[in-house]
Length: 541
Ligand code: SF4
Ligand code: SF4
Image (cartoon, rainbow, N blue to C red; front, top):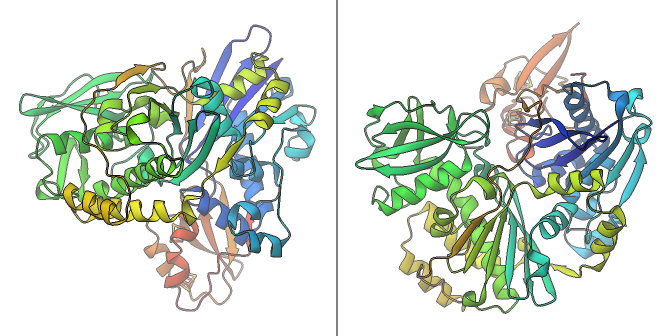
């Protein structure tokens, strides 16, 4: 029989098929985007609340069924699926209450009657989740538990799979992604938080950006007057790309592999190198507004701004946790970096630009801890009851960045630094003005240990299949539409088309491409308010 470990991430899903007899990983299937409209958890929540949780759940389940169809076995042979992810993704997967996660205020939650939602370990039959896939009806589905309602199974995974819980000295752990989950341990106390970093951290929302996948630029280094571009190969290992003059685009040597785009870790390297070599004198301005990294691959000022907002949000959240816990910056002993971005990024470059605290003494890099925990539970390497007990035992407080005055003040400094070219001295001055401790200069070189070379260390003998085109169409009838097609022209992602079916006009959206309610340009541009983005139904894939 076979089992599946499933990680429902905010920027995409990752699934591994495992042969339960010999514990071999057979194949890995990943999506390059989340199937719901939007690039972050807030967009996903907005979508589910606006159009209905059933619709959001249906899209997610159809996507997982599609991924399962990519596996080289009959679905009837799958007898167990273990699922990990953040509370929003796991709630949408189970089609359970999400409003407590959308509305932070206790009064609002009380008015809605959604207080104290428990997100414990849940076990289902396949028929309860994969209703329209009878071949999965007998399969057991295990949804891993949250620590508290806002501190999810993904946070539990990053604590269990690293040495974080064993640390006696102050330690931080962060799962770098669109929504950067983080936790600080000080003695027996754990404080968690999350920074809605946005998709730039994973290479999305960047002109030539792409997720960490074969062909993506993952690092850049100086070689004489040129930059050597490092590119991920088919096995997700770093290979030699072109040697290029980043200002003129002159290619001196083609290298072994041509880049197709740049991932978030590549952007971090570009910023670090451009700052250290003086190509950036004033953020976010690049020479002539752009740098060349390959034929038709460039990074521009807007990309630097987008990445800066993400890096700034994560640095502000890290500092906020330390300040709120009363930890002096110099006391921070360990930083654990998890997730694809945390694994592939050059840790020294990351700390130099603020993605991890520049003053930490030790940095340890891990891979995808959510998928790893799901796999451990599936194979019985970690007893399910122990995971349940640990989730109960960990006493963690959650610091809401959205309502934190400290976070707001630091993030204001970060935005001015990254997007308006505010000098570091002025940053320090504002921190002093807000009575917050100044960030120390980069004096100590930390010990860096890389415990994973890939975010998914073993993708199985069947390799990785990347599903780029999920292709779920959602449809809304646009009554009163005058077929002007302005909405199509306005859409930045080419995600919408107007169709006329027997005189009834519809807007058809490609769900995974649509940016959702943080965009809404099609709604705003419609001259007759025919688009409401509300009465949506899902068409079959
Ligand atoms: S903008 Fe409005 S009226 Fe024009 S095609 Fe789109 S839905 Fe129809
Ligand atoms: S314009 Fe409309 S369809 Fe296009 S990305 Fe924005 S919200 Fe989605």
